[in-house]
Each structure stands twice: as structure tokens, then as C-alpha cells.
Image (cartoon, rainbow, N blue to C red; front, side):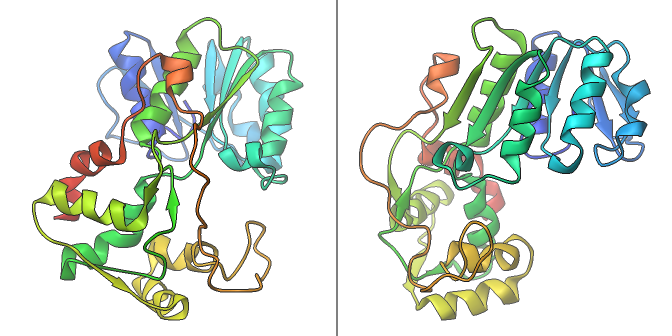
Length: 282
């Protein structure tokens, strides 16, 4: 397991443990907080030479994306005798926006000759916790320029479930699963779902994009790091965009691929996600 402490990786670890699988978790430094039954090993994907011991005896690998070293890491995985790699990728590869980050990792894995599956999540529902959580907790308000902009935010547990399914099951080799939430949900509807989950009203304050940008930059963290992209001031590659009003855009209504294709179970709704994270918004 690479990326075992991340928002997806830790859930993959849980799923593998529940299935009775021996798990080895890679981290850059010693960790004393690993779940019982998980072996911790030290290594760094950015320093492939540190991985040889960590990979010894490993059968299958969940690969976190580090494009700069992907080819060498995959070579080491193959040399260690592993037979399958499941890659944490991005829905932006499916849409063609990602050509220099996740895509090179996918290509390195495909060229390995090993069994492979790519997991390509679209918009993380978690983004809204990182983006709106501070103002909801402090003021019970969300400031956003586009109440009707909509998307298909995906629950992180659905992403992890697909990864576990691909690591353990048959019939997933050579497939790339693009993952979305099951329904188109506007920003206003997302805020309403969060309000319902916490049992308190949350005010949606419509502001201009540049005003929202000021709030997000002042907030720091995820909001500051991603403000320009989320509000339309720069495109996926980081280049300056023509207008600050394009934001995340609005998807066309219609069927989209979800985790159900891999797991056979309905994808979790945004309302379920909001209930699962109600305490974090409290």
C-alpha cells in the first residue's frame, strides 16, 4: 500500500483488512498509528532506491501517483514478483485534461506487463469539506459565486471500494474505472444536503468570483491552494483563464460512470456523504 495514510489509502487499508488480507503500508517515516495487523515499512516513491526492501514478498500494489519516478517504481514492483497494480488516477485522464501527471503513471503501469486497473475518480465530495467546512463551522454560511453550478461529487468510500475490488477480484484487469457520484447536484443542493445532515440552516451567500477568491485565499489550506482553479481564474494546467466566472462549470444531465460498474453496488449519494461527515461540519 502506497499512500496508505491518505483519504483514499486509509480506506483501502481498512477494506483489505476486513477481507483478511495481509497489508504492508509504505510511509516516509516510522508510523506508530497503523491499525492492528498492518505492517509498516519505510520508503519513499520519490526515491525508488528506498523501496526494494519494502516490496520484497509483495503480491499486489496500490500505487499512489508520482509521475517523476513511476517507470522506475513499476520496474521495482515487477522485479519484486508482484503480479497486479491498481493505480489511483483521475477522471481528468478520461476527459483528456490530465496529460502530464496521472497519465504518465498509467502508461508506465500498462507497459509493465503486469495485471493493471486504473481508478479514476472525478470531483471528490471531500473537496466541499475542505472548501466550505471552515465557514460552515464558524458562521453557518457558504460563500460561492455559482449556486447552480453542478457536478457529480463522488464519495471517497466508493473510490476505495473500487480499489479493493480491483486488488482482490477477477475481471478488472485492463480496465480504467471513471468514478462519479450517482446524481447531478448543484452547489445550492449540496449546501442544503449538508444543512440537513447537521440539522441546522446554512446560508448560501452568492458573491462575485473575486470576492470568493479573497475568502478562500484568506482561509488557507485546500481552499487557498485551489481557489484560482475552482473559481475559473486558471485552467487545469495552471494557465491563466479568460474569465473568473467559469468556475467548475455545469455538467450535462445524463448517465455517468460510477463505482457500481466495478462493485455491483449503487454509488453513495451526496446526501449520504454529508451525513457521514456531519460531525466534521459541526
